[in-house]
Image (cartoon, protein in one colour):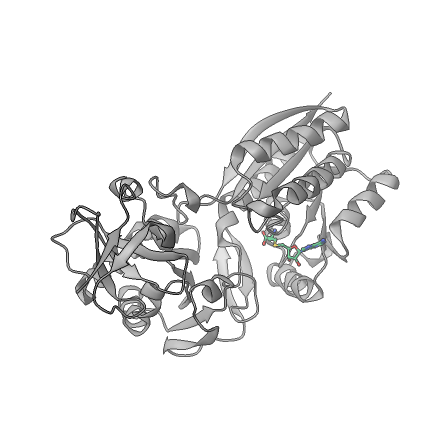
Length: 401
Ligand code: SAH
């Protein structure tokens, strides 16, 4: 068993159960641990702090499994973690067959992502610790869920930082079909786990999609007609279909990817919504300006862009982009109209995002209320001792007279 000894006074975050140990905090390591091996983390005075996975190639030199000295990080330990994670998602099964089963640090397995789409599971191994238990985790997942197969989609850019190869292959059981069908809150979606974003679908937007569905239903009840909505950065049509399910009269969706739009069209057909959906292959920044110049109006606009800021270095540029789309999105609304606006950039926190959106409101010279906030669903919990896990946030705005 190797020991990882911290530099003087570097144990503070570990005592608060934050799971990351940066290279700059490490004084030395005894023995010769291999990537992913469990090391005992000690303070410079020899006090036990945690069990962690050794990751020599990463600036996150180790990530903690446990803070309990009595625990052994063996197969039974992983089995317990996997079962606990799966059990915690049970309440969601009544609503959906697309669920994040394991969300890394929050579920006590740093660097492991597992998403379930119906009978199939998709994994992403993003740390040396998770990677070195790959076969074990594949088997435990099959046992805990009864899935038909586990597909490993470990192509995330973060793997390079951990010194890991890109990998895409069936890890356990059968190979998944080209398109897996899932159902969420009464809407059917096709998911391509091989080429889709993330593991194929934005599972994290479930609650916001439901809010969109409900907004469309409410609009129809109050106004006696279906709403006209615009969904920007629509990807495979998540929000578009939710709005149509709720009873929207017409949904215009914009994305710059033909592949994503082809999936979105197929999703509309899957639900029999194609007659009320228009799909535009265009740059959202340009499309919003053009619609504004043409005097277009919508009852609801959704802005769910990709991550504009991949790190703190890009926050300024990202802020300008967020402000631009929010300003032009607002201008397509009249009093009573609503804007659902999101940011999935971890480097842009809730406060900053609100400031950016407020900047757009100020420039619009419109009277605007915030009537709600959005975030990732309960299967993407925030581990309270690891605030870095928070990334998705959104605001619901209403234009006032
Ligand atoms: N709202 C989606 C997820 C959005 S992902 C959902 O709920 O499923 C971001 C999408 O934005 C991708 O599909 C990508 O193709 C698209 N995109 C990125 N930059 C764009 C741009 N400038 N104009 C239009 N679409 C863009």
